[in-house]
Length: 86
Image 1 (cartoon, rainbow, N blue to C red):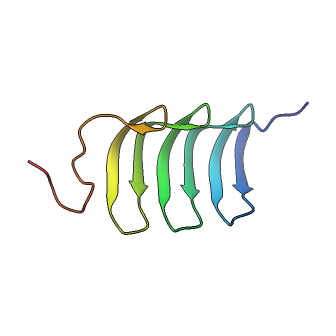
Image 2 (tube, helix red, strand yellow):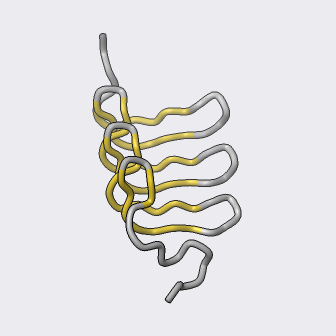
């Protein structure tokens, strides 16, 4: 059975899209995903999960730039509501 590997674009039925690198039918490497609600993610993926350095923007305009591990924010959140926490 063939599995997606390399660069490609996937469009979900709900209008969400992913464009980026694939390995064995999973998002793997660098990619950009935009969901139907307007939120988006640009950054690294590993085995279909957000992983490494990435930028996530929620549909309300708040954002996070930093490290991800296994699809979860990993590390100190510095810019989640458009202002800096000290």
